[in-house]
Length: 519
Image 1 (cartoon, helix red, strand yellow):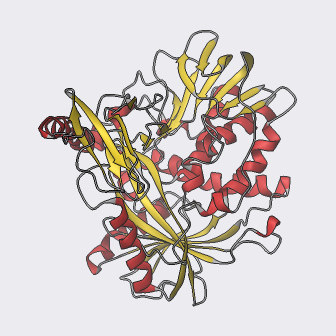
Image 2 (tube, rainbow, N blue to C red):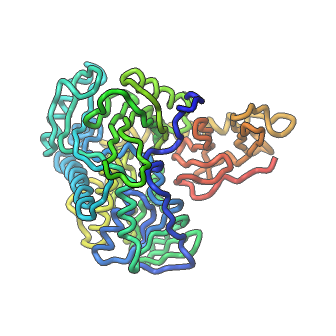
Image 3 (cartoon, rainbow, N blue to C red):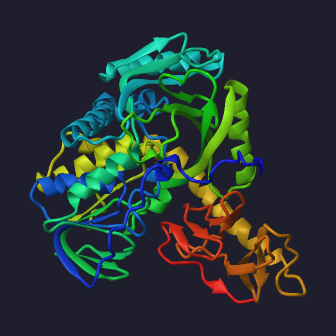
């Protein structure tokens, strides 16, 4: 990326155009009906549903609400999740594929209804969603997806042309989908949760969950006792059911660019590998605060497993920029950011009771990059399971499902990759050596993992020469972290935990920092 004054802000558009929240941390202990761990779209949807059903709720967020995955999304509200329905029908059957479709279509309607009822100004608008064929070879697959999507009741059609300014080999179009500003929406929801015996707590990291009766959530600032617990974090805090082996992380990259031409109408996703994604952000005329930037095109992709050998993060941003400039008349790049998602080995999220032994602990995770609808549906389903003990869509998302037909191949491939990364990194670290001055031969702005006193250490040197050393062993399961050069973080290639250059945990499943080492 250029170092000119036009260089993008390294910040999510959604965070840049909304105020920072200031909810207080938990103090001492608390008793409520339901503890909700995680202040993203799943946790806040579940919280508002439970509160309106008469339950007292405490939302526990480790940092600031709606700043993690939900704050770094493309913000597409769509039931079109790439080319998934033909796979769902073949692997799960038509009934469960229809449940998946119905849940995601209902999530779009739910968000729209909430916006209308509370008069939330969050730039919501209905539009079409397209998954387009990047190659003529994909045209038949597109047609199969259209047929199957129609079979399960979705508003799908095949089109030869799209609103894109370049040719495609056809696309599946879903009508009556939507886009919005997720933080404007969810900050308004959080305000409706907090108060009158229900709470939103920030800077309150959940460390452990005791799934007893009652349940107990240990945090940095005291214990929360609750009849039920919803685990709505990026990765489950309580993992007795092996979620670390049943889903894998992937990181993708986004740019918000200003273009000279008329903004795109619709949302777009390609059959490329990795896929490209596009949509226009059009703030409403009544956007408050004057902080919005007018219409911007969101374009990105370059999805990959974090930390696995391949182009560095900075190169992935450059590839996104090259794609944008190839297909659009780009005037400037305003923002750039990345996002992390988890994909289950059978492509269906885990929503329901977290494991067979935890009667009152529920989970919503593994949304595979489609968290705006899957996450909303998860919040609705989990609230229903707690209040009513049933939900019409819960069957397909059941975390206890056994799906060898759908998941066996992916399970073996992903866990072989994780195992290979674990062993390979150990060997590399043992072969590495430190320089005579104890800081290694690091140029400014660079980082790498070395061996020091038989222990792997991550070294990073700032531009001013200051060198930071942290343990390179992820506290989650012992994999070695790798350096993310564009965002200056240590990322775990096994299960997606991220840490600052000083070792502070940014996102889980790790709940502990990397130990800082003195040189």
